[in-house]
Length: 173
Image 1: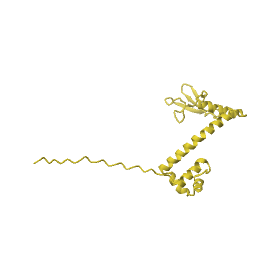
Image 2: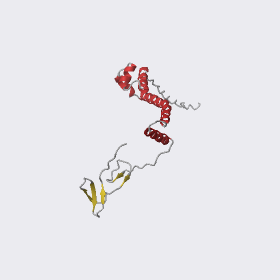
Image 3: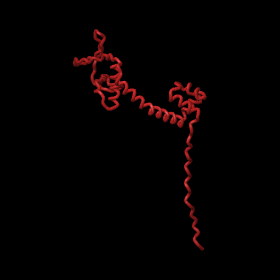
Image 4: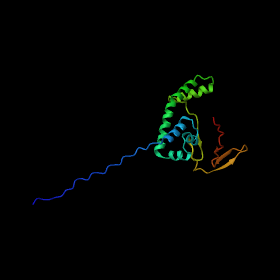
């Protein structure tokens, strides 16, 4: 009698389910277009212009495929407007206002990679690092804080070194 070995065929691996391509509803696309082209300034106005409720539009915007559509459309809008913006910057180089010409030329030079030397200096004497700049760590030295006659704060150390710690009077441009 012949050897009756039973071998089963290899099992077929299960197919991966196709990922469904989710479409953005037509009215939601219309509301997104209204936001992107500026005809609607708020989500409420965009929803009204598309004939949907604000709540439905807000819920739709939280869905990943709708948010991705919005990002894509926004990037496209910015890409199309960048040429116009560049032309405006170039036109401002010939403006009558010297202040506007200076700002436009600084921007154009900055885009070209030519920037002025930075002269801002941020000095931090307390050892905290919330801002970029130089930090002088004085944590190992014991000193006492005093206030002079003009109201300026000073840190006086045992070796009679004095460091003025009065906050600078920064003016924003």
